[in-house]
Amino acid sequence: MKTEALPLWRLGPVSALMAALSGAAMGLSFYPQGLYPMAWVGLVPLFAALHGKSLRQSLRLSLIFGIVYSGILNFYIAVTVFRARVWFPYAQWQAILVTAGAYGGAVLICSFWYVLFGALHRGVRRLGGRECSAFGVATLWTGIEFFRSLGPFGYTWGDVGYTQVPWTGGLRVAATVGSFGLSFLIVWFNAALSEALTQSVRPVWRALQSVCITGVLLWLMARGTEFSVRREASQRFGAVRLVQPGFSNFVKLDASSYRRNLADQVALSYSRADTPALVVWPETAILEPLKSRTETFDQVSELARKLRSHLIVGALDEDDRGKQYNAAFAISPTGRMSGVYHKRRLVPFGEYVPMSEKWKFMRFFSFREREFSSGEESRLLPGPFGPVGVAICFESTFPGYARELTRQGAKALVVLTNDEWMARTPAPALHLAMSQMRAAENRRMVLRATNSGISAVIDERGRVVHSLPQGKSGTVEGKAVGRSDRSIYTTVGEWWLLGCVLGLLWTLLKTAEVPADTARRTAGMASF
Image (cartoon, rainbow, N blue to C red; front, side, top):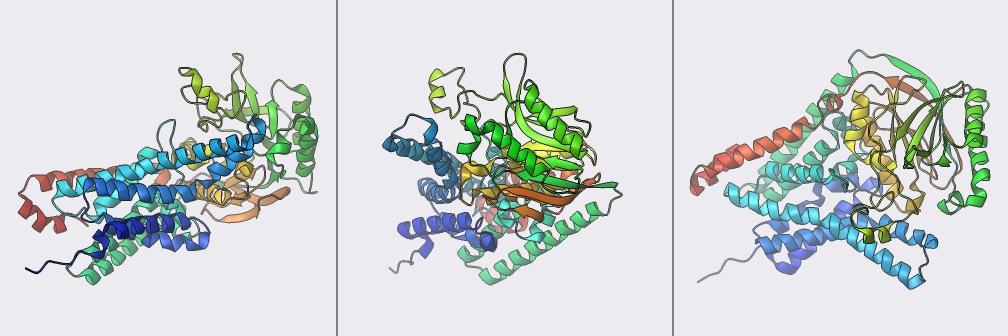
């Protein structure tokens, strides 16, 4: 009896290598940015390796992919934790152990979501009575990305849609379906190519069909962007100055250098003869509660009066109950405080320790002497071209925050952050890319002021117009536009994702109602 040769992608060691290769390809497609086209084929090895595997094998392959992928993207966590050792009484070997534990734990937690995908991918395929369609794979992957962004531990770092920020066409599509929509299209294309390679019937035709359908979808969504741009809109213009002091965190947090650092930021604000309509300082530019420090507030107030400019500055705030907030203050051209916003989405273990009130031992993992409290509501700040929406650091990585601010009436968006913790890793470039995506999604200019780079003026199409690189001290000068129109994404949000999930459920239910042999004959017509 002649036995059929086992396909290459079904061999154990080869499958593991394919999963690891897929993780490396996807991780590298984020940076350097010139490799972004690799995302459109980077998942093909993983999907081919999962073809025909048991549940246990699928879990193992997904875990391998997740460890490699998350390990590349989250290396900045190891750098951040190791650099923070100077504030703790750790010996060198203890710092290495703490760093390895934090980095390894973060990678494993992120990998869990890809293991979940591997388990559900197989379940969806079995329920459907055949290999899961490209539509089902893309819906499942994107749905997991969306749910991963929710809750106190929400995290969007590594969502595949951000790989396409260097591509102008991808940013245009984001105005219609957002970053999750880009993720869906990328995963759908990868899954369709994988199906073409693993199916014995007309693989070339299936591949060409996938390319054509993806191209049509991208074109239609880009046309939707043009529709949103042509709507009637009022616009107001103004010059902006973004201050980037270039301090290291060791200098910034040194109490003996505090007054000198503050004077340096004031001097940078005066660095040019022309008068901007808006001056923006980075996150925690003032490391004390601004309301209760008369001397510091007088300096900032005098700056706004002399420049006759609006000023948005990152500082601390404290309420009557003693709670401390990471805040953004607006100072009017008359020198009066005109608004304050408290950061709502805090960094777990960086700005607060989850469950520390219930479990006292959790405070061992705190990186600061005192925790921040979370703000209770979104709030627009006054600006020279209308209300301005502010996102502080971590908040800029979540699509819902910028969309909420835009729907409330923000004419432009301001991002305050301190990426110096990430040092010279590629992470600050990815963080900047997320701000570019927020601009493209909502058709709003983003003014991004950072402590040590990359500060940038980003136009409403997501393109960086002016910027200052990492490690430099100076200002970014540019013209800002306050807009009042809305993109399709701002108007309807994640409408397409809900439709995809409902479509997948309907297809699976219809398939489950008929015998397995009938399902195999009709599934090709039910999927796309």
